[in-house]
Structures are given as C-alpha cells and as structure tokens.
Image 1 (cartoon, rainbow, N blue to C red):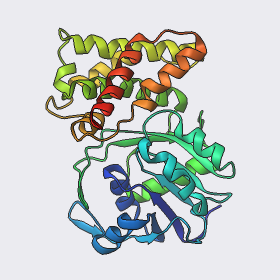
Image 2: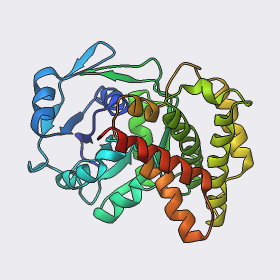
Image 3: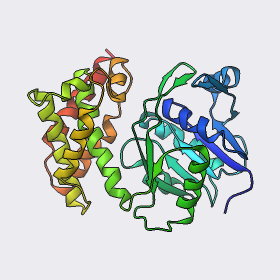
Length: 310
C-alpha cells in the first residue's frame, strides 16, 4: 500500500505533535514534511524544533506547494486552529493517506473524512503525555500511550491499522488497538468535558478536583454524567464505571499541574469549549436531553473569552 520511502506530513507542531513527529523521524526511510506558512514557516526553517535537547530540521512546505501525497498525515493543531488547517492539508492527502488526528473532542475525524473522502482517518486518543513546549523547545519525560484504530477492531485488524502499528513499533511508541474505539473516544471526551472545563472555569490546577468535598468536584461529575446520558442515548457503551475509572486516574495526577485548557485561560488564549460543552449543547438539543452543567460551563468560558477582548 505504501511507498518504500515513508512520507509523513504534519500540520501543527505543538508539544504533542512535535514529540510524536520527532520519534517518527527516527524511523529509517521516513521523510517528514511540516505544513506551515508565513512567520511560523520562517521560524521553523531558521530555528528548527528542539525535542529533548535534539534539534530537528524538518522539511517545511507551504500549503499551496505541490507535493506527493503523504502516507501518514498527523493533525496536531488545536481545535481553535482546525478550521484554518483543514484546507491546508489538501495537497498532502491522496487515496492511500492515513490520517491521525491528535485533536481533543469526538468530531475532527468525521470532519476530515467529509472534506477528503478519499483518505482513511483512524480514530485515536492519547494518554499520559507530559510534553511541554516553550518557544521552539519541547521537553517530555513520558509520551504516554496512543490508542488508535477503526471504529471497531478485531485481529488481524485492517491494513491501515497494521501499517501504523508497525511504524509505531519501529519508532518505539507505546500504543493499543481497542476493540471498541468509539467507546474509548467517548471516555476521553467524558474526561475532558468535566476536567478541562472545570479547571479552566476556575483557573485552577487538578487539586481543585481531587477533594470530594469541594463543589468543583460535584460540577465535574455533573458534566461527565451528562456525557454518559448523551452517549447512552446514541447506543455508545459508556457508563458510571467509566467515571469511576477516571477518578482512579485523577487521584494519581500532580495536584499542582494544570490542564491544557486551564493553561489557555491563564494565557488568555481561545479555549476549546466549543468541542466540549458546545458539542454537548448541540447533541443534548438534538436528543432532547438537558445538559445544565455543560450549559453553565459554556456560559462561563465564553464569558471569560469575551472579557479578554474588552
């Protein structure tokens, strides 16, 4: 299916995108191209990206440059930049292109497939990555694990899943292929909808959610139980046990650490509220399910964004 030379295109070199790209760049016979324009492209050509003290000078191509389609396209932008990035991928997508989206939420793969029906997006989520980016420097201790696959997966898996698994094996990346990838996507969505939004609304670290006597803890659970209700109305296998499994993970997180969404709020950057509470409001309306906790979080976070413009 793939060429001898593995062509990997990347759009969005944030902490996660840069970390994964640096590892994949170590695989023999890979050629990495970063899609960028303007000042960002100039900075990448001049300074490269340094990941764990190793400088990487990836090939930088403009969105309009004519190139061979990628074997693998990694989408690493935040959702706030996704609308702009979507048309910039066009020259890198062919009939055999596999797409891995690192975006939060549950919609980016469908949006990519709608825009480029010839490609093959795989569903994916990541856990446990602690990468941090400052300027052109990225550091991480753990890349955690990625789960990816088709909506449902049974061995020996699809050709595309096997190809990505082989590439990840060569790169030394930890991964899993769940049987029910849709349920796993929704579990991550459940986490983010409660945790990211509550910490962002309160400008607070994880500690605010690790105390069951704090009202923030109850707000997190209320938002997550609304996700369960919306998922179950669509016959998605999500339940109270998934919240319990999250609470086990929460207890082990650093109390002073901040979610990415809380960091965005502290820096007065646009948040990803539209793919969490915004998506919940739309689905709740369509399904006739009330989502008061997510309505409250949507109103608070959108109001914060408005305050920054005054």
